[in-house]
Image (tube, rainbow, N blue to C red; front, top):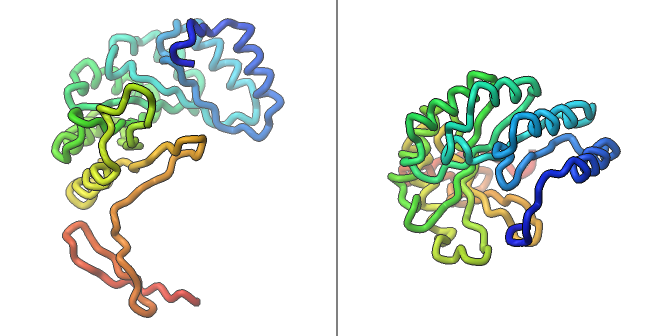
Length: 235
């Protein structure tokens, strides 16, 4: 939709979506994305969430937003009062660099967490911004201190105009390897590529499984040491 003119949430378009969802009983998980849905006023958010919550087969509602990072003042008590009516409600935040973890952002995240909204961060790996282990580790630690679970580390999508931000996949694996074992597991996100062409999120891990020896699986830990785990191929 980007670059194709204004796309506002007219009630007629939203009603068409709600009508579809009411009949699509296979749908149990809805993500409210954008743009940024928290750019809407409380009345519109209340309208959207109340309609979704009235559909019995929708169990899980998420909001994707960057507001706590770029406009934390948007997370007002009035907004939180609206959101907490519609549990279970989860929120995917977008933090990219430790300098976004300001006192104002911490207050916004704490306000959301105090309202019972689980928070996860989806961070995009960006060349020259956060593509160093120390920078990423600092970001992950600060997120945890703000009660935000590092959830995904995204390889930068191959979209027009983003080439100067993209790193190699090897760089992303290097960063994961620099986190795993060197800090708490809560601070290690899942590194994923959102596969072009609708392939979905594909997780990537460094090569911790290094082969087999008979019935043993050979595993490499964060220190580079090799360990055996009994794993007979036929049980």
